[in-house]
Image (cartoon, rainbow, N blue to C red; front, side, top):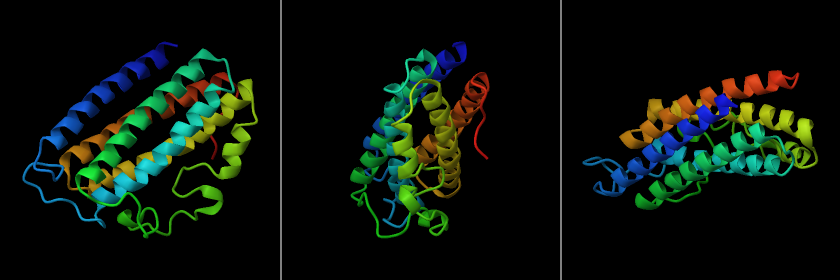
Length: 210
């Protein structure tokens, strides 16, 4: 319980920082970083913003599903924290695309900005690494109690691992400073949550999927 509370506190801090980042971008010359040229549609900055917005949306949906499938306070609080954090970050990413006057969709395959456009098969809705398939999302919606908790924690662990891979790509390739900082914040927070979810799975006699 104390661990979840710590994560919640970290989440609040991240959201406060996110608000400051959004303000900083809005106050710049419209490029996302003072004195920096607006990113192009095929840049890592734009690609990350588009892809992570999609990736985050599934995490939000997954989290709201499990909140309706269990009464466990610890899991429900974690799911709420993840949903709120990623919904806010998603809004920032889409807001930057608007600020840069760039499209929110692309004809390029996901992950192309990382040089990995062929990495995810897209089979059954899993458009990017770590994303759950449509079949898995439907399954989560049929489970209750401990079964729902375990499956959610396993799915979200996979989801975070894929998200961290993408965020690390932005840290390495993005040029807009505030976006790189947000990406690094995602890496740090999601690594902490993976450890927390590993502990929660162990308490339930389960473990992350291979």
